[in-house]
Length: 115
Image (cartoon, rainbow, N blue to C red):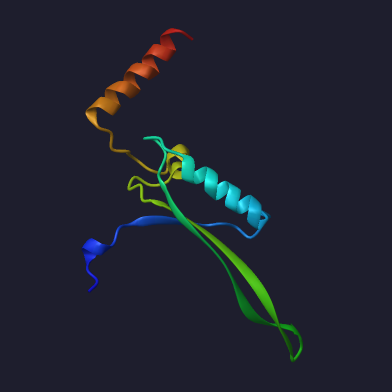
């Protein structure tokens, strides 16, 4: 039986079609993601690579099948938004633990003392 305890929230990134990676290059990137282990990097959980046949009209009343590749990457969910919005200032606040706040303030002001 399915219940909420059997699920967890994840972040899924759908790769753009413009990214031209061979299957080997893609799997090499996945292998690299799988080795990352750092407290400031969201954990890579897995991937999905699939192709589907889609019927398309190629000329008036003529149809063909085009194979569309999809590549999805699955990461642990980070609840404070994405890095792009944080860097652009579109997120008003990021929650910091007291120790993280002290670390940030010290590093910011120490760097200003020596520049």
